Length: 209
Image 1: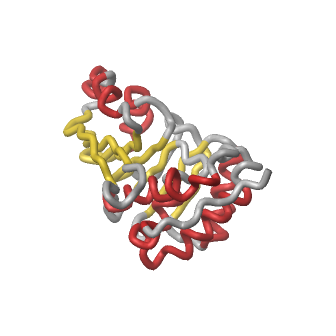
Image 2: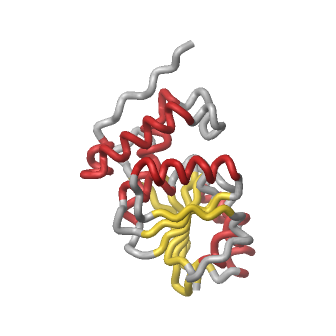
């Protein structure tokens, strides 16, 4: 059975601006190769734009010019999407699996993304020349498990931006010990894209001191 790619929502132009053509190219590449490479499931094409691409792009406004790491980049969600939307930000895509690293490198080259470095490593083992200003992650692990993986990568005063679902509040409640141990402060849950996206994006934002 042929699965049809979701039509591009109007919100794509709002979120990507003059980077829209690059976003279209990435979305097409992911649609063409993602299932074969094990990056997306077979049921994702009818909602690829709304559930994945735009869901990630909504977070672009939270980024500051600087060094941003994306832990467990996988298919490039959110790392490649954010790198497309924010060419003024330097990204380090951290991914341990060779097959996914190859995909990420191929996309960086194909899309001409000069602001992206792909790092093959587990988050807990990664060695970067300088600490990061912000760290993102999507669908990697619960907040309490993500904190030990992401907080050590940040400079003092750096920021966690972790995409979460409807249980974000419960995840924050369950992470009390890790929050204290890793000096995580100002934890808040942001809802992005309301009125623009079919499904709003939830992000846990916090500062590491």
